[in-house]
Length: 190
Image (cartoon, rainbow, N blue to C red; front, top):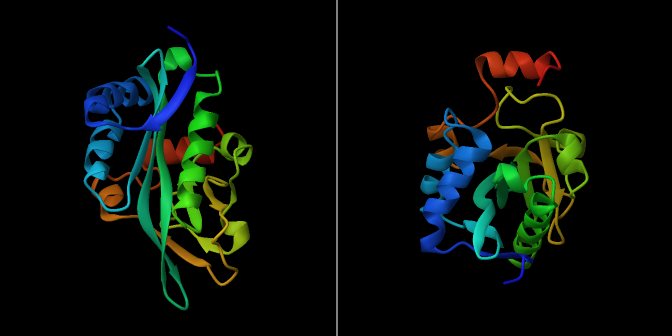
């Protein structure tokens, strides 16, 4: 068997491996595995896995959200979560998953993909500071620079406004940071 990295759509048989991957990547205290389960049931969801020797080693989701633009609501996506098994991190797997997810969104005619994450990491992978491009975050609890956007080929200049997560992200309180996490992010000790 080859140790070649592959990326493919998630299958029902991958769900347990994806849950475990996110538990290991994010920690036991994080709601990410349950968030993924809930997002799968939602509309306009794309779920991709990275495999090595048929083992699921990475996962990314695109979920349907909205942009509250002045002329009308715009269907957009969020890239969240992105996870790679700890022993496979630093090998370009996350980069490949982000690229494949953005390509899938572009093929589907999605004009914008938003996320909350490291500007250093995602800035090298097609994302830019969303606030600098006329977008407003859905919460004031975002650390500086964490609200990011990738503008895809069907993006038009009038598409600016407030990004609105689907209810699932709010149900799991996965929008912005709270409490100590927000204080630590704000102090630079993230």
